[in-house]
Length: 499
Image 1 (cartoon, one colour):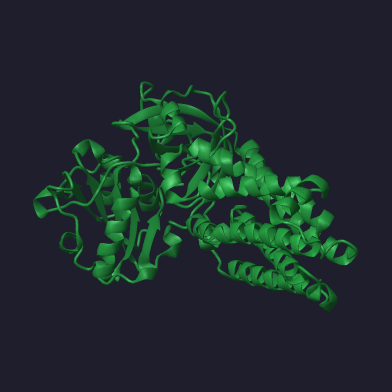
Image 2 (cartoon, one colour):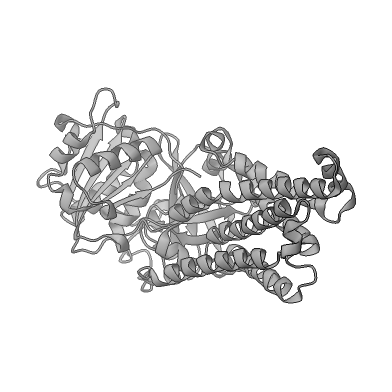
């Protein structure tokens, strides 16, 4: 999940370079002994390096299971049905035939279903490990965004229909009734404030708005969603017809909200705090990998117990002034070599730019690992790894983590040679496993990288799993080309680099 920029389609055969026969084999992770070697290189030294004793056996990450994810989806569906039943059974025939009764009943139905969908949205981004491992954070975020317009629309309809119903019952104007509700009824003003916060979060979720906002600003706006939910809950329990005078439904609804809050507290706060205290990561070195690209090496405890797969990412929080309050997603660019862990980023946002000058010794808190961009999802023993710019970062760790039996073809794309991030390490890893490396260098207008060019590089691509990582436009074009080359959808794996 390292933010990237640049990169695009490109390739012709004369721009492709592969390892030469008889090429001198270079270690993917430098292992030259000597006191002058910087910590970043020691951090990536093989376990057999003479500088230190062999590292303990690293804990392997488990393959994801779909069963718990299916159970979650089933429970979510049952909960939605129960919410509809709660709204319908709260109405009486007498209330429906009274003036404004139908509008108020529909308003209450819209309000309850909208609130329930908000809870589902929160659970989807609660970062529950079993769900995230099975589905992937990218897909969970897509579901979150697809559901997003519905609760906002339903809650807007709730406010409009309730106001209309009360106005019909009181035989007064709608605007006059709206003012009476806000001025006289308990928790209505809080509900209006909650709706305003939800609208702000919804507007900033549109792709155009996200592209124009800094990640830090977007994150801060969405943090207020939790405040909106708290205000909405107080309004529902205090004035909802389904709850006033119905202690059992009030208890059930309160438990549902409490469980949702508990999931957020456990998996987004308690678990990351426990993991960060256990591993006690701190920055030991930052070094440049290319123009605007740096690797950050952290040192910690018990990293052999950190079950992480190549291709996954962490949410990193740097505990220093001005940075501690926000976490950013960055992929690891190498498998952990206890006591070291490394990620590689391109400077785009405020935090990523400031990391180039971060002080050694800075403490680091982590959340994760997250992501399904791993070898566990492959269906074949042949893979194609295609990366552009700093999109190579998760591919580099994925390549290192692939079982030895897997045949790997790697394609690196850059507008110029300096854009081939971690090129030497990728070349050495490919060489070690007897794979093939193609480097595609040139401006997109000069060098093609379409289905025909990819088929030339990998004639048997249709029988392989394809992993693609890079800027959104590059990823979309490669996926489209792979589909034209008859790569099945279940064998196409991508990593999103946008928030």
